[in-house]
Length: 133
Image 1 (spheres, rainbow, N blue to C red):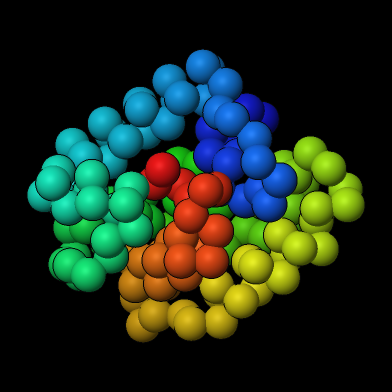
Image 2: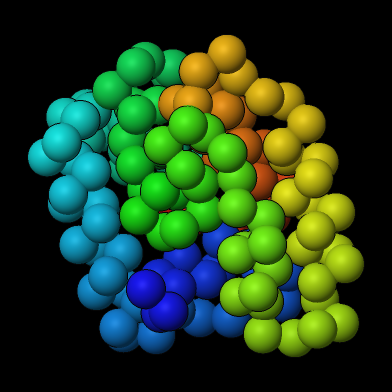
């Protein structure tokens, strides 16, 4: 899948999602909601950066979104090379890589905890480019 629907999740430079990317993100959201059945109110709170409620369905939803966005494997391994290949401006790559590395430093003891920790960190450091905006 060459089209990267969560391009904004890894960019430092501001960039709006295209209509196609928004449609794919919406499709992935629907699929992950159906599969893991997290509380949809808690999913909506993630947009505002509210990561206070941690439960397994919500963490699995986050992992699902990262997997469908090609950012993470089901084992919780982040695909930094894939993420960096999607950064459109070469001059932004060092800053993006630094942010990714900082957010990957807090690994979890499960893939979904690693995904949760990463998404929470990234949102705290760069809320404008979070996967959950």
